[in-house]
Image 1 (cartoon, rainbow, N blue to C red):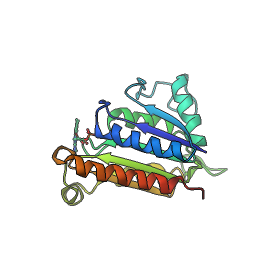
Image 2 (image 1 turned 30 degrees about the vertical axis):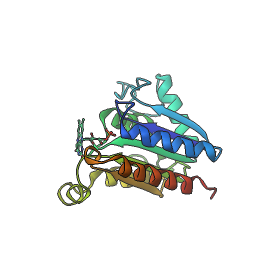
Image 3 (image 1 turned 120 degrees about the vertical axis):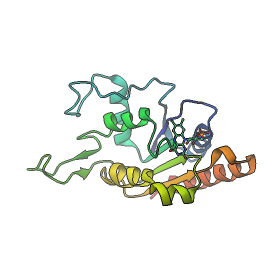
Length: 198
Ligand SMILES: Cc1cc2nc3c(=O)[nH]c(=O)nc-3n(C[C@H](O)[C@H](O)[C@H](O)COP(=O)(O)O)c2cc1C
């Protein structure tokens, strides 16, 4: 069993990284092979190159590796902060380059851009864990929680992963250690549940 785990936060001391580390421990305990990527640490290039716009192949070996890992993943886990209601740019570029045609989605035979795309990913669950500094009620009431639509509908829904488990923890800046321990424990429980065989 393979888990693809991506963390996108510039600081290794962030709470996003702490949650990713906690998830890794759970996955290891369940015997998963983990494809671990800290996008900042590995210098992932988020800019889609000219000529890659057909987006079925890349001359960037790291992009090819990410695509292969995404395609084989039983679980996909993503950890990132809420930046302007969106993923950090490095993660947006990862989506642009890695969730590509014929890897993450395709078109029914006989159709092309005019057809309704079908998802190709085989993962049983996608888990997305966000951190933020906006109270949850304000995020929902004022901004409409755009990250929920991005991940559940625009990305994973389109690519065939119907089970999207997502949480947003915060405000991190106002949290104490006890609260953060509770959030970590929830992540561990959700990952443990998702890690169980189908
Ligand atoms: C460029 C930038 C944009 C941000 N935009 C938001 C935002 O729209 N909503 C929000 O709640 N927090 C926002 N934040 C705060 C981060 O979400 C917050 O620092 C982070 O989630 C705290 O957890 P961490 O330890 O994982 O960084 C932003 C931070 C930065 C640097």
